[in-house]
Length: 271
Image 1 (cartoon, one colour):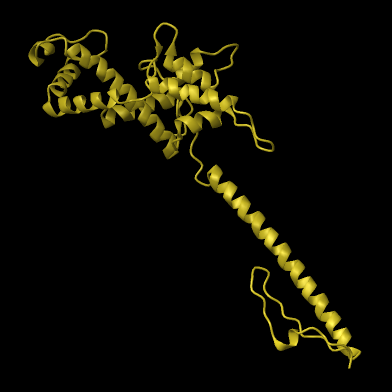
Image 2 (cartoon, rainbow, N blue to C red):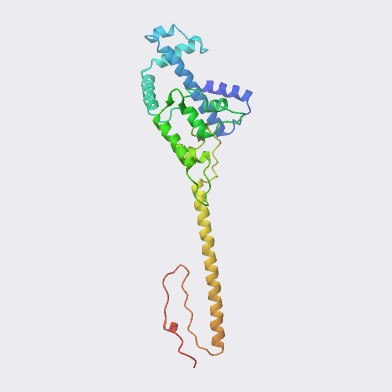
């Protein structure tokens, strides 16, 4: 998709929908979707091109259903016959063959598929959507990896929740099995704008635990200082009435060693 074509496509979209094109994330997501649509369109045109024995014959047979001018068609014929483009197509084909979770929706966007699967205006949850887009009653699962992933989700959903633990939501389960990606929801497509200020769940949990430990340590220190002050006061009171007591030797609360001195010997009695 050429730059001028992207610009005109954005203008047309902006005239029909309210979009925050000044937001770099929104704009980059839209551009990515447009690029994907352009690739899908080019792929269909390429299939038409490959029905002819060579580029010269293809140039004389412009497709009628893809809204192409003769100039556009000839430019595409030049592209399709370029050895560099052909090598790139071969590489992309190998990559697609290695995709583990292949949906059965073709070029249809996940958002459109999810909308079409509504039941009483309620869209399917992510687990149901994964199954619907990777399994059919006629053909079964698209790949064995897709079947394994879904069965893992079902297993996690049926696992008993430990006492005191929060049950996992369907989103949690799907994220655990399919993984996560910033700005992209596996099985759904582009998601909400990533919040850079928001820590990950693990980081938040660690910070919370660290804070609790620090508060617990502060309580121990406070209690230790209180006891130390009280014992010093008692020692001073005993010395005031001429009762000899050893000097107090304290170790820090986190120190496992004990201090010793001649004065720490037990009191022998009154003078």
